[in-house]
Length: 139
Image (cartoon, rainbow, N blue to C red; front, top):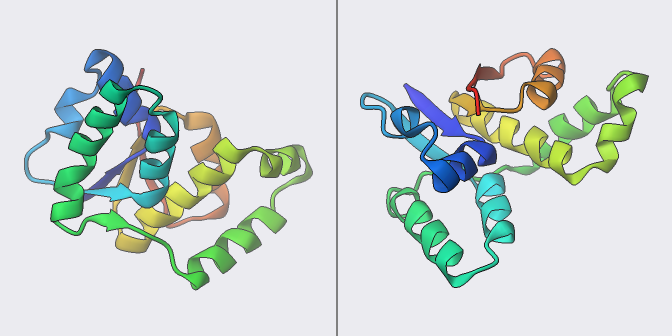
């Protein structure tokens, strides 16, 4: 089973070892979204944080399991954003939501189940991008 983790899962693990069972689960092949990796590096404000992110990314990088998007994925994302109901249009202006849409698309692109703590964003995303397989974890 292919799995991918949203940025918030890694952050919770780094801060207080939450979700260790899912991150260390045997029998699954883990992938890292390049968007989640970007968010993690953007939040690394100390040398210690930089070391942690470097350690986190290394096995994914070594195994060539960092997932990027292609132009067709961005076209699909653009259609999804243009079709959002009016009550969600303001989300298009928020980097966090746009990043979550891209993270969802990276999971879809390889057929992975995405683990996240963010039910609000991913319920909206799943309503418009049907193939998304998502599991919600509590913080």
